[in-house]
Image 1 (cartoon, chains in turn orange, purple):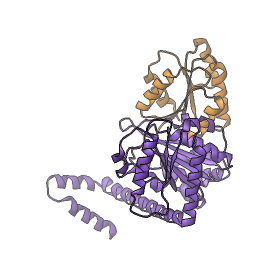
Image 2: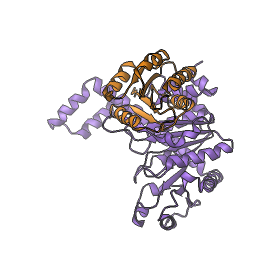
Image 3: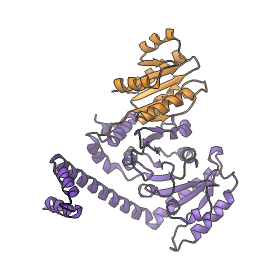
Image 4: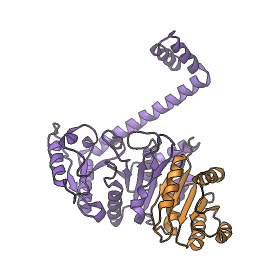
Length: 130
Length: 312
C-alpha cells in the first residue's frame, strides 16, 4: 500500500494573483505530495467537482480578492454535500485575523496568512489529514 | 451498497474512490478490479502523446468537447511526472480542461508516474478499465511529456495520436526509432508557427520509407489547438482509424496482444511478490548476498537453486 497525500491547490474568485498558490504547490510537491493545480478563477462548483474526480485528501484554496467569507464556506458546504466527509479544507491569502474564527466555524480547518512558512502548512496537513 | 455497485450505478464519487483504491493498492483493490473486469472492453481508448509543451492537454480538451457534442461520454486519464527525489508531483493537465470540469459526461483523473519510466504510471491501465466499466464511451490517456523512447502508450491505447510541434530538430530526428514509430495518427500542433510545413514534409518522407506495406498509413494533421483550428479534421482522421481497426480485424489483434501482455505482467508481479516476500522474510536474501560477496557462489547458481525450490 503506497498512499500518497493528494492536494488540490485552487484559486477561487476573480483575482489573478497566483504566485502564492504556485509557491505553496511547489513546496507541497517537494514534501512528497501529489498536487493537482487547476489554475485561476475557479468557481466553487469547479473546485468541488475537481476535488471529487481527483479524490484529494486536501483542498487548499488561495484567495486575495477579499471574497473569502463567501467563497470558502461555500466550497466547504458543497464538498460535504457531495459526500466527501473527510476532506481537509484549508485556506490562505490576504485574510484579516478577524475573519478567521468565522471561517473556522464554517469548516475551514486552518487559515494561513502572508508570512506563514510553507513548512507549517506541510506539518498541518501531515498532522490532520485522514 | 459497495463501491463497485455504486460505481456501476453511476456514482462519480465511487468511480473516483475506486481509482484511488487501485492506485494505492488498498486491500480491496483486487476485489474491485475482479468485479469490474466483466464490464470492461467497451470503450475506445485514445492515447495522446508527444513532447512537453506540444499541446497535448489543450488538444485533448478540444477533442473531448467535439465527442461530447456527438453525445459520447468521456474519460480522461492525464499523467504527469512524479519527482524521483521527493515522490511528489505537480499534476497540471486540468488547467487546460477547466471547461470540461462541470460536464457530467466527462471524468478527468490526474495521475503521477510514481516511478514508471514509460510515459504512463503502473496503474494507468487499471484507471482506464475502471472508467470503461463506468460506461465511458471514449477514454483519452494523456502521457507525460515524452522524449524518444517512452512508448508504453501503444500497449494501452487502441489509437495512438502523436502530437508534434515545429522547430524541435532536423529530419534525422524523424527517422530515429521510438515515438515516431507508434503514431496511428500524427498531429502537428502550433501549426501556425514557422517550420510546420517542413516538419510535415519530413514526417511524410519518414512514413513513406516504411518497408512494411501497411494497410494503414498514418495520416498527418495540422492543428492550432488553442484556437480550435484543425480539430474537426483531426477527429475525422481518428474516426477513420477507428473504422479501419474494426474493418481490418486489427482492433481484435491489438486487444488480444494487450490482454496477453497484461496477463504476463500480472503473473510476473505476483511471482515477484511471492518469491521476494518469502526469501526476504526468511533471511535467505541476506544470506545469498553475503555468499555472493565472499564469492562462495555465483548469482546464476543461486537463481537456479531458488527456482528449482519454488517450482518443485
